[in-house]
Length: 460
Image 1 (cartoon, rainbow, N blue to C red):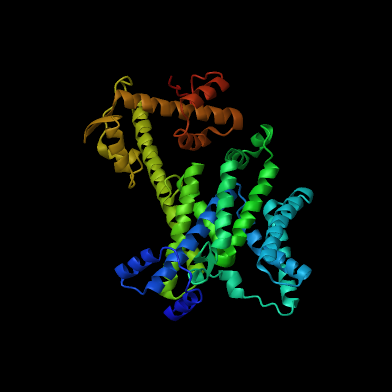
Image 2 (tube, rainbow, N blue to C red; image 1 turned 60 degrees about the vertical axis):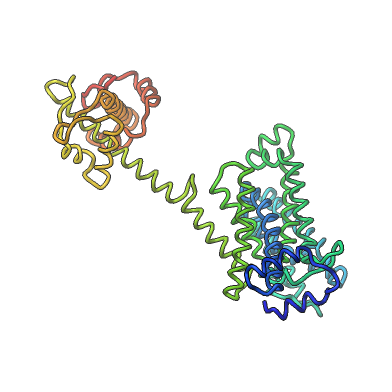
C-alpha cells in the first residue's frame, strides 16, 4: 500500500480524530517510518486480531464437534443469501445483505442436518451437498443480475490490507469500517460462551449425556451454528473465503497443544492473532495478499505444532517409540538370562554372563547398548563387563516376562489350536505387553496351568 493511497484515505475525514494517534506517531518515530504507514499497519493488525479471536473461539467448538467442514460451507453459502436478497429487493444494501447472509448460514445448518438425518447421508457428505448447491445458486443469480459486479478478489481474499485505510466515523472518532461487524460479532460470541459455557462443554464432549441431564444438544447445535455464521460473515469482509483457515487451523493447533478447553480457547486466539499479524507483515514485505499469507502462516504453525505437540507430536511419538524399543530390548536380555538360569545346574543362583552375550540377547542393534545402560541404571543387572548378573529385582522382572510368555503360549494353544512350533514367536512379541493383572486373568481362564505347551514350568 503506497503512502499516497493511505494519505488520501485519511484526508477524506481530516476533521475527525483517529484514536491512538499519539501512540502510532511515537511508534513511527521509533521505527523511522512514515506516520501514515505505521497508523495503517497498526489498525490493520488490530482488525486482524479481532477477526482472529472471533474465528478462533467459534472454531474451537467446530473442531471439538468434528464439524470443521461447516465453516467452509457457511463461507460459501453467504453468496446465496446475498443473491437472494438482491432477487427480493433489487438493491445492494449492507444491512439487508448481512441479514440475507445470516439466513443463508442458518439454512445451511438446517438443510445439512435434515439431509443427514432424513436421507441417511453421512454428515460430511450432506454438508458438501448443501453448500455447493447454495453456492451454485448464488453464482447463477449474480451472473444473471444486471448492474451487479462481483469482485472475485474481495470474495476470495477480503480486504485486510485496506482495513487500516477504510475508516468510518463512529462515536466521534474514525475507526476501521470492519469494526462495525467484527466488534458486535466478538461481543456476541463471548456472551454466548459465557452464558452457555456448561451446555457447550457437555454437548460438545458427550451429547448423549447432555440430553440425559436436560440439555438440548440440537438447540445448542443450532445456536452454535448461528454464532459461527455471524462470525464467518463478519470475517469474510476481512479475509474472504480464507476465513476457513482462521476458523479451523488455530483451533486445531491449540487442540494439539492442550487437552483443556479453557486453555485451548486462549491458545487458539493467540495463534490466530499471530497468524494475522505475521501474515500481514509478510504480505507487506513480499507485496502479496494479506489474507493469503495469513492462511500460509496458519499452515506453517500447524506444521510446527504437529512436530512439537507435547502429547501426539512427531518428536514425542518418535521418543516414545525409541523408549518402547529400548525397553523391549532390555526385557529380551532379562528373559534370555532367566532362561539360561533355568537351564543351569544351579537354577536358584543367577548365572554369570558377559556384556557381549547381553548385547546379543538385546538384538545387537543400535538400541542394545542403551538397553543395557537402562537395565544397570534401573538396578536390574549388576556386575562388571565380563560378569553380568541378574539382581534380585531383575530376577523378579524376568520371571514375570517368562510367566507372560508361557501363559500366552498356553492360551494360543487352547483357543486357536496352533502347532507347538508356531507358539513361541507370537508369545515373544506379546510378553512385553502382558502385565500382572492380565497374567492372572489368563491363568484363571486356563484353569491355573503348571506347564506351558512345551512342558516347561510356568513361574509363580
